[in-house]
Image 1 (cartoon, rainbow, N blue to C red):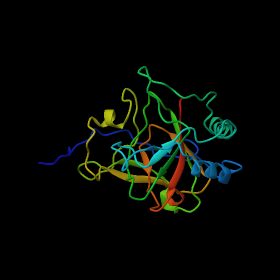
Image 2 (cartoon, rainbow, N blue to C red):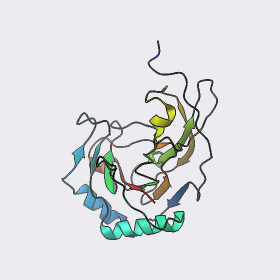
Image 3 (cartoon, helix red, strand yellow):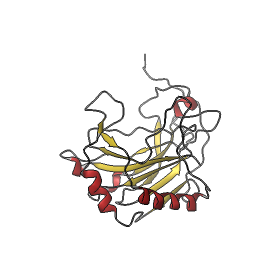
Image 4 (cartoon, rainbow, N blue to C red):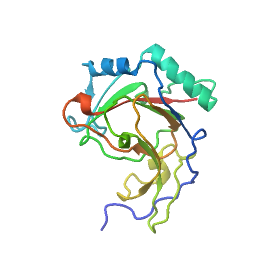
Length: 224
């Protein structure tokens, strides 16, 4: 008997469109190397897999950007999306997403994990790529369902569902349950912003020896 269900609830589909569903800002910050050097010098890392039993990979620290740097990023997001206000949400139980967080993940520390972010805590998400040495393949992809009969399904979580697990009705799906729909290549100092209810994941991770070689990003989660 398979450990995975053979059926998923089909989701609605809309092809991700640049300028409507996601936005790309190259040369996002005026001094990205200074930000990277500050992150490399940090000593306050919290460790995930494989160092600890956490499900999230690599290591992370808060905050990533300074107030001035974050203002530059948020000005771009508001201008592109039309959002008049951005804020970081907190759930009733006090939970919140790791906004303005630097994440470092090596090649064998993380895997592709298609997901959406919680609609309760996030409308737009963003990732700023901070390693000039890793390959184009270490960017981000948007996915759509691959249904049990081989047809391609949807890619969006809509209310009343609050995340992908809720929408699919099961946390466990076949390993090939999602297909890449749109890829955004990794570029140093590129900021990718996207609607958080789209199925997405890092394409790949990089680096084996030392923090300098690994995929480094700053991630953001905004309500609007």
